[in-house]
Length: 587
Image (cartoon, rainbow, N blue to C red; front, top):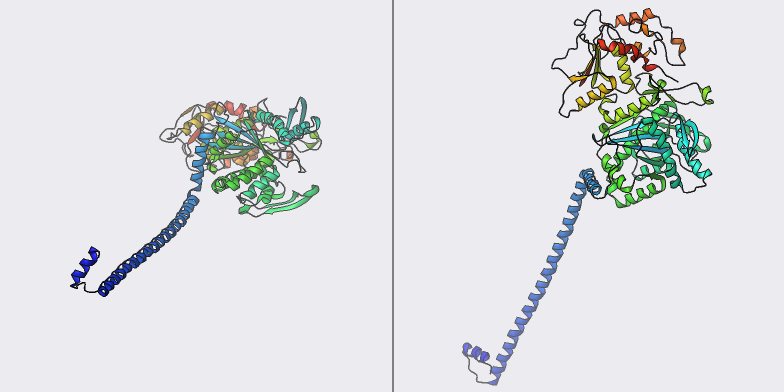
């Protein structure tokens, strides 16, 4: 008998007297151990079940955590997608980007070309010609529109030609297509771009570093791929002569206010030029607005972080877009413009007299008689005391690029004061400044000075001083720091003999004094507009009466400016010899 069985029997007080008892005990033992085995099996099963439940709970919590994390990550991305994209572009540019070409002044000039394309009725007539200039010192962009009707002389592969500037690119494309029998469209564009680049470089006085070309189809497709663009329509557009199919016309209209435009509507928005659209100059302005809206949508919507969207846009670019930038340079270009807001972009153009009748801003062109150009309506540059017909336009391009703070209707940081006894000097200088889109904060008289001076108010960035010296180079007036107290006087402090400012209407009627000896005494009203010769006989006495009525009266009464220009006695000869001649158009 096993030892443990014997001990069990002895502990119970029983004696081993019969086989039956032993058999019963053995059975009991068997049942005892059998019960332990069953309990152990149940315990193992319970553990398995508990582990399974624990795994299910952990898995469920993990799924919930992923969902919550994804939601917050998506919310964070939506709130910070611009920063995320900016940082991504910054890193990508540092690693993969290539520095853009620059001039000695740290400027990059890019020519934007837009046309209908191969299958369009207008073909390769470039109705969009915009010079985009990147100022790497200031982190700003200027956009100067070149009107399509500007009449120029140009050369295509040794053949001299002349005509409207929007035909230059077309003539070059036709040369390669018909004379050289080329069929590769992008290769022809690459060979034609330098022809228009050369002419634009001559106009702005600087080299064109790159060109970007896009056709109408590409413009429509990109905007639709981005989900449309938002533009603020400043004035209701109604154009009953918008180009339709087969050289027909259709009506295009667009309400005033903020509008979301799809690709087709956006194309009409940038092409319309009849009715209330503002002609070619209004169209040029809207083209620049659309480009800015396109940039905003592309960089702020997060679309460029979507691989599928990027793939679709790259497909459009490959089919409808051309540039002589490398992909590394394109990356650097996008990185430069990504943070630009409206305040960092100067939009400008060059216009004719009829388009600048009120402000005279950007008046650099005139319309000659049609019969001199076989009935065509063209534009020619106004040459003012210079043999270089493009000098004023090139100066204006340089001005909006290096001093964008000066340019624009809402940027009034300059005041002009007449300190002499000659009436109208300050007013005429104002018109000269207006021509270059410099609008004044104040125009008035001041205490007499023998010498002219430009005074600037010191600022933390030093930009006021820089701008003052830009004006010095232009106007040949010395610069000094502004004194603590202003010496702008009211009528009581001015000499009674000092002539007051004259009205804008009066100055605007002055074109060229035929007898320079009368300047400053009897301002002669001679119109420069070929179409309004009937208005050229204003009586000098009426002019004097108008001047007397406006004596000691300020034209403007606005907050003090950052830069003051005081015209002293030494400026009288400059005024007599040069200033009034600014409105003479030398054919």
